[in-house]
Length: 204
Ligand SMILES: C[S@@+](CC[C@H](N)C(=O)[O-])C[C@H]1O[C@@H](n2cnc3c(N)ncnc32)[C@H](O)[C@@H]1O
Image 1 (cartoon, rainbow, N blue to C red):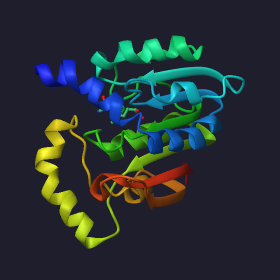
Image 2: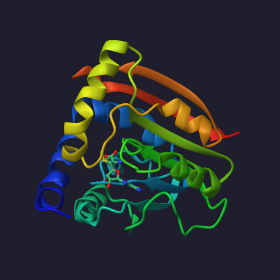
Image 3: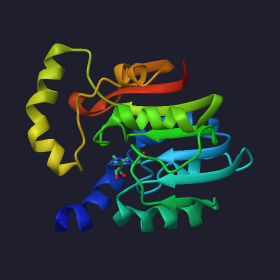
Image 4: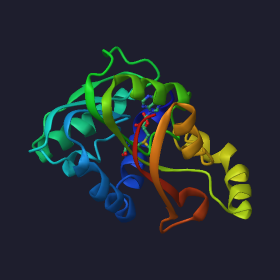
């Protein structure tokens, strides 16, 4: 791993993931998590302050980027919520089938190399009737914006930890066997980066 990815990227991601409109998305989504919760790609722990501690019985976080874990641990202490943080990739979870009530995945499907495989794993570990809570940026509906997503991708990807600007989140969810109640809209900011999809998904 190069110097940029190890030392600078965690703070840049933490900054971008803490922008006000992003925090507002978290505020709406994350308190819905309940029971045994698995958070995919916990990053610097930006969701931690938004969990409803009275409804969460166990919180496990996975993220292969160990250089972000210390920031997530700090946030967990500050938020007063315990998290079992593991340096794992979402594509292969060493977790029993049907062992979580809620999976939380925010701003992470853009960065997971095999997002469909990761979503299949999320589906596998959810109990029947369990929910995936998601909020992601992705493929814009407007052709002009999509062209910018394609133009910017070669520069953006290496600078943003492999983030793909144009992932079609509803398609990925459907391919992995989720049926989703999805909202979508542009949020504030540059349009190639800010078309959002969010909602709740259940196994078909
Ligand atoms: C833009 S950050 C978002 C962090 C956090 N989810 C949030 O909402 O602030 C993307 C995260 O996806 C993580 N990631 C990348 N590949 C992954 C994988 N294969 N499995 C799980 N997480 C992954 C990155 O390490 C990074 O922490």
